[in-house]
Amino acid sequence: MRINVGSKNQVKVDAVKEIIKDYDFLSEAEVFSLEVTSGVYKQPTSTDETIQGAMNRAKSAFQNCKYSFGIESGLITIPNTKTGYMNICACAIYDGKDYHLGLSSAFEYPTKVTKLVFSDNLEIDEAIYKAGLTRDKRIGRSGGVIGYLTKNRLKRKEYIKQAITTALIHLENPELFK
Image (tube, rainbow, N blue to C red):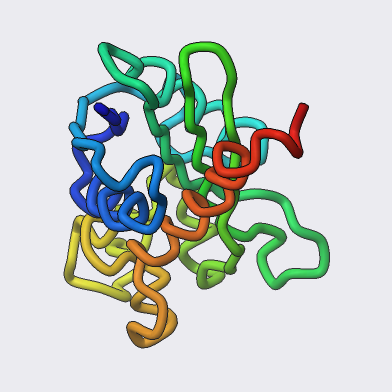
């Protein structure tokens, strides 16, 4: 069985490779990464845009495979937070007919970072670097901002795995979602 991941970001690809080992029906699959676009703004800033980006990635990556995975992180509006926004990771699994969606837990970026996303139209990697909180210009390809903020208690790959795991609920329990 072949699974495609709609990203060349190795953290996303490794998250898929690691999580499918826990599922009997996927454990023997080969995972391939494809460079695809999300079809949404480079830094999604709504639930709809984040989920649409994941779905677009999954559909674009659906080439000669059983399943394709699209993974997209984005800011969503959350009342009563310091900035008004929290980050989520969305996973869309596409089987050629249906999408199976899952989300991660959410967390808030530092105020300065969120402001830079909106005032300077920056992606999170760019904003956290510009804010002077990291020297890693591509932090999203390593431990991620979540790793930085939690002092590596929760790294980006584990965060992404949350979204993948919740999306796989549909595939593992199809009889419950008819």
